[in-house]
Image 1 (tube, rainbow, N blue to C red):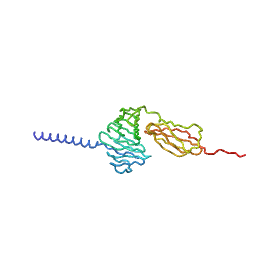
Image 2 (image 1 turned 45 degrees about the vertical axis):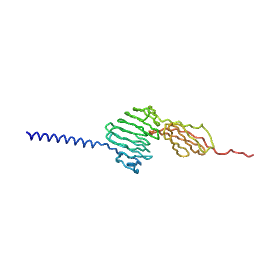
Image 3 (image 1 turned 90 degrees about the vertical axis):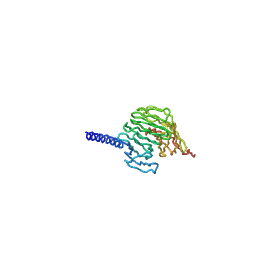
Image 4 (image 1 turned 120 degrees about the vertical axis):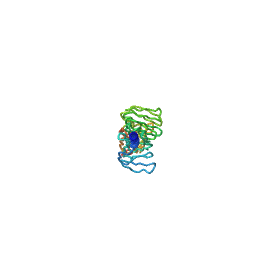
Length: 283
């Protein structure tokens, strides 16, 4: 009988130890990993403050790494099969932490779009002391200097470190300048108003000032006979550029791209430059 009891206890102990070991190994397997799932164009990573080097898909990311995309590049960070973070062109993001609770990033400039699944933990995106937090859904974040914009496509997103703290529901966006936050439904288009000169205006001047209003922090591209010029709207949405005038007509196209990559276009004409002198008739 004693041998039977000893055998039963031995088997029970083996089961308990085995179960504990299985749980430990399973927990080890569940350690969060952040990797570059897709890379298009020039994408570089600086590991722990080292020199940035171009990388390919499959590169693992760790706390302290800095990811940057070129002007025509894009990258996708994957935390789990369902949680993905897409970086737009000319974006820079630092990895602060990666663990079972999720991932914490710092978006220094540019644009990211996140699709979050609850089993992956929370996605936290910081910018100058402000933080976007989501555990489920889809959202976008765009940053330029102290202007931050967040739009939620599905689920809910919390925005902290602003006045007042806000929960952003699906279909809404928040624009933050400094710490001041303004919420509104996602508009159908980007605001763009150009102060065009009067029709048929003529001048002998070599240059013309172009100004107007658009979304705060938006990138404004001007294209005309002079070529292409890019400026940024300030934190109030005002933009201003001095462009050269060609002899004759000066058609101009102005395109504003907001922090989330949405564009709007306005076409018009600058003054006609006429430097020909008056005709003098001799009798």
